[in-house]
Every structure is written in C-alpha cells, then in structure tokens.
Length: 131
Figure (cartoon, rainbow, N blue to C red):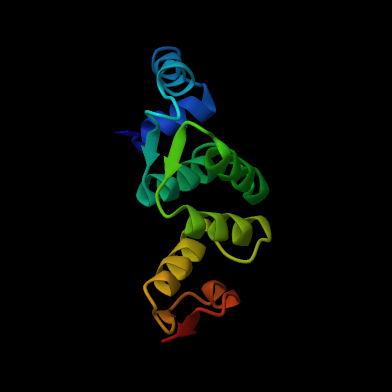
C-alpha cells in the first residue's frame, strides 16, 4: 500500500494541471491495484473536501458524490471508511460540513459521549453539545 497526499487526489479529480494530473491519473488508474492499493487518510479526505469546495466551488452534493466514488474505488483504501461514509451522508443531506460530521463520527468511534463545540451549525448532529 502507498499513501496518497491531498494534492495527488485533487489533481486526479480536477484534471486541471497539464503536468501533475496525468501523473496522478497514471498512478491511480494504472499502477494501483487491489493487491497494492493507495491509502487516503482522513486528513487527506477532509483536505480534499475543503479544496473542492473552496478552490473549485463544488456544491455539497457534488463533493459527497466525489467522496462516495473514492470510497467505492477498488484500488483505494480510505482510513476510517465507516466514519468517512457517515460524514459523506451527512454532507449529502446538508446537515453539516464534511469535517464536522467526520469529527462527530470519529468521536463516537472513540466512545465520546458527545463533542463540545462553539459551532451552532454542528449542533444539527446529536453528537455535538454547545459549550
């Protein structure tokens, strides 16, 4: 298994750089296999969602579709796949940001009774409590 940094994932998804995008495509589509997959950390997933929103202007449902496609790729292993899936669903349903939903899911996995926040939007998820 080899790790994939956010910039590799974004170059592959965006296909907007004449030098880096073909290299990312070659890696992901031709060199990675089920036996030798690429690893995407939760940090890289959050960064990817953020870049797709801020730099490329994708809507929540579009980002959710991208995350879903990464989760379904046979040649990729996504860290904390279950929690990433939960966060993707929350984003798709427009409940909270992908990052907030992932924070909630990871806290639940760590057996946190709840997560304190100052973010009122995060309160849309039952795992959050206002501090």
